[in-house]
Length: 440
Image (cartoon, rainbow, N blue to C red; front, side):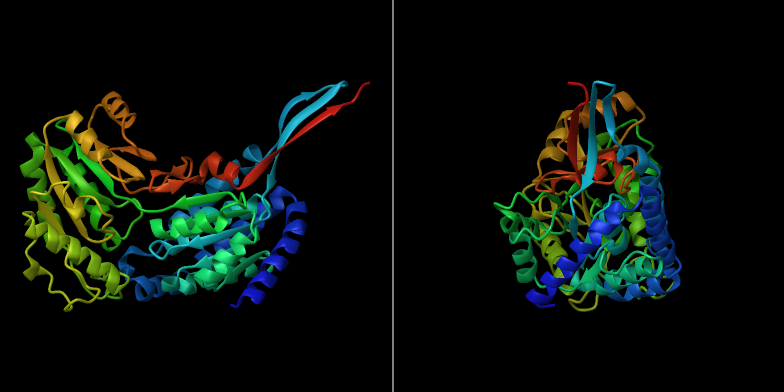
C-alpha cells in the first residue's frame, strides 16, 4: 500500500470511528464478541496456516482458547471500567470523569503469537469505541486477513477495522503525521526505538512490548517436578519463540543436579519435525535468521566454557536451516551472550545459585524486564523477592501465562505501557472531566 492509499485508509477509519463511538457500549461488545466467535469457527483452517507460516506444531491447536478467554474478560469488565466516575450529582454541581476513545488506533502485531498478541489491543480498542488499523508482521500476513474477515462477517464496519500492508517508511510517515490517536507495537527493541523516533514531537501515546530475557528461580522448598516441567516447557514451547518464554534458570545448589537431570530427560524426549505432523512436539523456527542467532549464541557459549547437555545426535538439524535442535547449557555465566541477549529460541542456560541475594542480583542483571518465575512454597518469601525484581509480572509456581485480569506490562528495554485488564482500557482511552455549576 502506497502512502496515499494508506492516508485514505486512515481517513476512512477516522470517519467510521465517529459513528462507532456513538453506538452503545453493549452493541459494540456484542459485535466484537461476534467477530471473535467467527474467528474461532475458522480454527480448523487457521491451525495448519500457523504451522506453515511460523512453524508451530498442529498438535497444539492454535490460539483461539486464549483469544476467547481474553475477550470474555475484557467484555465483562468494560461497562464498569469505561463508565463515568461520578463525584457529585447534586442540584448545585455535576462533577464527573468520562473515558473517551483516542480515535484511530494503529496495532503493529508480531508473528510469534499472531492472534493473541493482536487481539490484546484490537478487541479492547474496538470495545472502547476506537477504530483499528492493523499492520501484521510479514511472516504472518494471513492472520490480519483472517481477523478482518471474521470481524466484518460479524457486522463490524469494514472501514472501522482495516488490515493494511505497509512498509516501515510508510508506517513511520503516518505516525509522524499524527495520523493515529494511539500506537501499539509488539516487536524488537530496534522496532520500538523506530516507533518512538517516528512519534517524537507528536505526543502520540505509545504502547511498546519489546524484548525479554525472562528468568526462573527455583528455591530449596520448591516442588521440583512441577518446577522442571513448567520452566522447561516455558523455555521450549513454540520453539522458544514466546514473548515471556523462560530464557535463563537459576536453581538453588541443593536441587541443581536433580533439576538438570530431569530437564535433560524432558528435552531429550521431544520430537523435532514437520509441524503438520501431529506427532511433532517441536517445530522449526519461524525464519533462518532467528535460528542463526540461536546457533551463534549457543556456539559462542560452548566455546567460552558452557556445557551442552542435550545430545545433538537426537535432533539432526537441516544444515543451517530453520530446524534447530533444542539445547540446555550448564556452566554458563553472565559474560556469555546466551545469558544476556534475547535468544527467542529453544535454548536455555541453567546456573547454580547459593541464596536469594545472588538470585535477585542475577535476575536483575538484564536489560529486559517482562516476567520472572519464582518457585517456592512460601508466598511471603516470593512476594519479598518479587518486590526487588525489575520486571513487569512476578509469577509464583507458574510461568509463561497471560492473565487478562492483570496488566501485561514490562520495564527497561522491554518497553512501556500495558495491555489488557483495567489498565489496558485506560491506555486505550483518555480522560475528560466535566465540572458543571448548575446553580448561580
